[in-house]
Structures are given as structure tokens and as C-alpha cells.
Image (tube, rainbow over all chains, first blue to last red; front, top):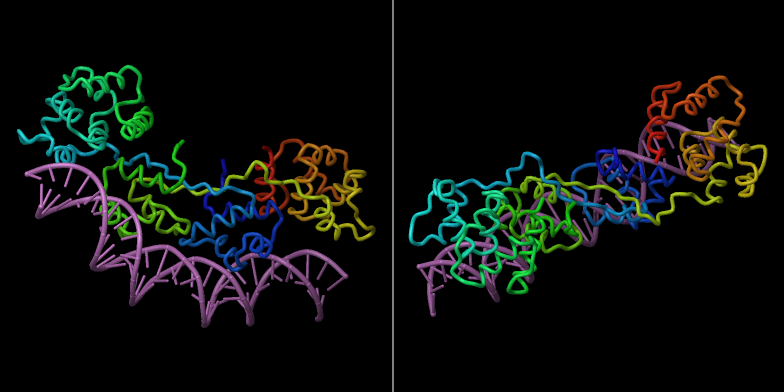
Length: 178
Length: 178
DNA sequence: CATACTATTATCATATATGATAATAGCCCT
DNA sequence: AGGGCTATTATCATATATGATAATAGTATG
């Protein structure tokens, strides 16, 4: 959208586009010309509060968002998965090898006993496709959980048993759909 | 992109996605858990400095930009145009009526004597198309300015006489192209 | 040259964020 | 019930941004 790199450059460009002096901008934004100049010359420690006042005075909305870096490792390490899921495997010591050698066993245990963040972790480790594939093969001890996961498989992002869990789970599946 | 509204929500979502506790995030970001919690629960006065540290710790880039609001009046008022261009019309009192009744006269005067920000102002007032149309009809006193504007008309965003002016003018025409 | 803008930067008092710490409360697990 | 996590919030000392003001310098204009 905007070819200008820093927010300082964007503020200056917009101000000049509107033909405002620093003093005029400062008055509109209810701040000082010194501060406005500091924001345009740019250093590191702005306050979002002031930034938003300046943006509003320039007839703009201030957009702040996180953009995941390409190299950012979203997939957790096997050791982290083991450490966090170990408590679900009281009968046996969980090892990293099990994750690759017997993922169905791990998936069954996690969807049976795990919390939502346990499921999230496993999905990130196995990948969405592999996880759902194992869910399709899994055996369930309770009809309730079976029905829930059946719905997930049939049409992703679907209501489930309890309201709070349903909302959170639904948004999670929507978000992970890519 | 991200359906979550506030930056606070985005930070929390990303942190939970990575399976970090507030204390872990704070350590990675070289800040305190109290601050991390404050940023996630959200109030108004964040510092961009801290925000950026948190974003980096979450493997993200912090994006900050101005988005012009739809209703934002970019077109200046006639009175403002008159006030700012009056100095170019020493021989006569410029009035708002002249802008609509005799725009060619105004355009000629401005492209002959005005600075870049004068031209910007007039373009915003008349609109890009009308402005260029009048430029095409305009008479020039110097061959140099005629050649410059001829180039603008032939292929927009083109080099001109001096380097500094050329760069600024070129980027201006590129930006105003819609 | 004089006047009047402009932007930048310095200084200083004040307002506010931050970090350390602790208290509270909730949740999970044994 | 108890231990160990977690997140939130309060408090307080300190670091930093902000606003007011002024000094400096540049530029346009008369």
C-alpha cells in the first residue's frame, strides 16, 4: 500500500499532503510542535497514544499488527511436545521417537485427555492434515468426544458440547485452516 | 489478514500459539511479566519500543502504518487554496470564483511560479485529470518549463531538470496516479 | 536587509511507562 | 487438601516521554 518505510515518513508525507505545518498538526492533535517534530524525525520510543492522536489529526487510522516472519519456527520441537504432553501419558515414558513411530497413539491420548492448548501443540507439530487423518482412525472411549470430533471431520469449525469450549475451538479451527 | 482487532489480542494469540507463558515471553523480550501482561490486557499508552521487543520475541515483525479514512477530506477548500496561492497573483486579488471560472489562468500561474507544494495543492483541488487537461492547454514563458511539463504529459512520472526536484516530482506523480 | 514564517534541537519541570516485587486468585495435578 | 504452575494487579523507585519555552537556522517575501 504505502511505499514509505517508517511511520515517521508516513506522518510527514501525509502532513505535507494536507499542507499542514508542524504547529498546525500539533494543535489539531492536541500535542506540541516539538513532539510532532520528534515523531517525524523519528527515533525509537514513540507512544502509541501520541501516535494515534497524530494519525487522527491527519484523517487516518493507525494500523498496528503483527506479521509473522517467514523464518519464524511455528512447529514446536519434539522435545517440547514430549515435555508438555508427558503428563497425559502416566502409564509410560513418552519419547520423541513415539511422536513419529506411533502418532496415532499420541493423537488418541491427546484428543481424549488433553486440553485445547495440548491439541493446538500437537496440530502444530504434526501438521493439520496428518492430525486430522489420525483423528479419523482414532478410537474414542466416550460417545460425546467421538461425536465432537466427528463433527470436526465432517465440516471443520463446528459447534461442540459446551459453549465456552465450542467458541474457542471453532475459532481455532477456522484460524488453522490456512 | 488477522481477524483479531487490537494489538493486545494479537500478542496474546501469538503467544498462546507458541505455547509461551507470560514469564517466558518477558524473558525473551527482555522486559517484565508485569509489562507483558499489561500489553495483553491492553490499555492505551504502549510504547512502540516495548511493542517491537514483544513482536520480535514472538517471531513477528511489528507493522505500523497510516490508513487514510474514507471520509477524510483530501480536497482542500477553495478559501485555503486562495490563501496559499494568493502570493503568486501579485497583480490581482485571487478569489474563490476564479478557481472555477478561470482555472486555466490559475494553472498557468502556478506551474510557472509555484513551488512543488503549490502544485500539489492545486492538483488536490482540481483533481488530477482536470489539472493535466489545463496543463495541456497552458502557455509557457520558458522553454525549460514547457519541456518539463511536456514530459509529464507524455509519460507521467518522468525526470526533469534538477535531480532533487526530479526525484520528488517523480514520486509525487507516481503517488497521485491512484 | 528586514520580517515572518518554517523545522529542528536543547533545556527543564512534569507526567507516565517500566521493572522489581509481592499479593491475590485461578487452574492443574498429585 | 496441598504444591506448583499461571495471570493479574498493586506498589514504588527509576527511566523516559511530553509540553513549554527558547535558541538556532533556513527559506520565502517584501
